[in-house]
Amino acid sequence: MKYIFSIAFVAIIFSACQSVDMYEHFTSFKDHSWKSTEKPSFTFNINDTNALYNFYFVLRNEDAYSYKNIWLDINVKEPDTTITIRREFTLADNKKWFGVAMDDIIEHRIPFNNAPTKLKKGKYEFTISQIMREDPLPHILAAGIRVQKIH
Image (cartoon, rainbow, N blue to C red; front, side, top):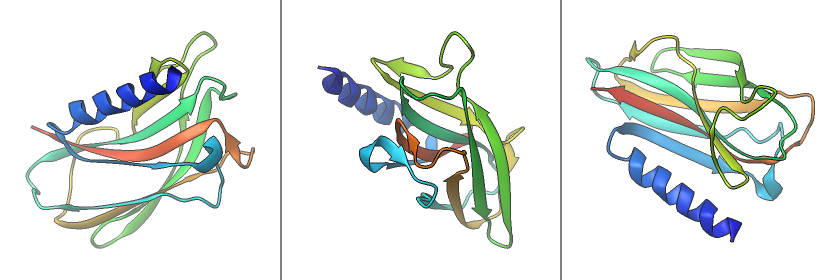
């Protein structure tokens, strides 16, 4: 029964997101564990250089995930440069998850740019790596990137 709710939840998220997002993709992890050697990569092109964009880290975890945070390295290849962002993303406090819960699956969409940003025209590649002390990191279903164009 919980899997039916999970599938419905994912379908709702995908259908709701398509109208306003420029890009959103995920990588699912086998056995619900994210190994540090698994580095999901996401590539997209920017054509509208007048628009502003927001970036989000997207994570789906099980309620059994033991931490209130996750540490990541996000490698960003822009048309003419490469940068790495090391960030801690807070997922919960002592009482509740900050993401949207459906049964025992929690989905987080956490911004990682401080303000909407203009982008250069060209190809972008985001690669995310978990850098937590526990490896593999259990109870992680999927991780991804969302790029939202501000209208």
